[in-house]
Length: 425
Image (cartoon, rainbow, N blue to C red; front, side, top):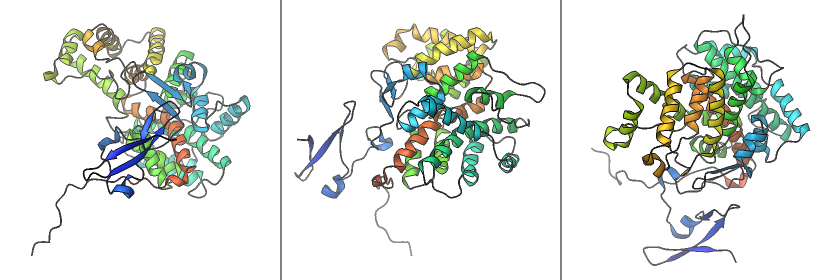
């Protein structure tokens, strides 16, 4: 017999609510029929205690520092899979076979270049336009070129569209950067991997081809893999919300870009670099800055430490730290911000104040270091996050599209404005 929870209402009546247990033992009280049975709704602003969906894509246990894609631990996925293989796993639910890898790689290559007419759109943006505004607009515009109609009608068409979005988002991203510096927009190369191609698109010049090192390519591929999905965060929930109205994949992904743009979501790694720049500009020592952070009255924050979900080490951070250390050691970069980041990391990890509060470096701390070392400008940090998160957005859109019984998302509210009143005479 299935479990139920009993809710006693103020009038003494009782509502029996089903208990749902997930595959990892997560327990939820099913309130889908609560309003119909009792007239009550629940209130949970920011949805921090509300399960908005049933999903088979990603599992997180923040207390234990666990992240799994389709059941596979992130530690194993990051070690054995490229970003593209991880993307196929997230979108279709299983690790790709050799034939599937080849087929999808071919689709990515075939769909990497932007139509010539589409490329002209970049000239319509002012040079100071933020790359995220360009990215969201261009993804929406891309639908007009990629799909004959608004909707995807077959599994083959979905695969092609998924490949096109994943491939073209990096081409659009690089083109938005090149446009912002009045540089020639590069064409993708057909003999490079996904990640190598992006770096080529960003940094190659007509007179000098940019050839990334294996270490640089691996570090960026790891960055993308570790950002590929992260359960029901702000942008992914936005994608599902938009998709529930049967909006097409492009509109839903563009909405995800807009949600990710926020400083509290995709802007976290940018905030790390801004903090480092502030410390250097003000000439503050690491010891003094750490002391300010510990003094709640100072208002100083240690950006890139701690995480809303993880109450332990962010498993992604431990993986990315090794890649960051290797990259910095190999590149011999002279950048005071990166030297300062390492000093702050060492100071915080040796301080009981941070250790006792489990304020460890998170993925944003190390991703900011890696992107800076690779020469990615600060304005592109959130764009990089968008490229990595695209597989998760596609997978969540697909889950909604394949579950028509869910219906359109329509949260309730508790109205707190004026009650009925007549217009003044």
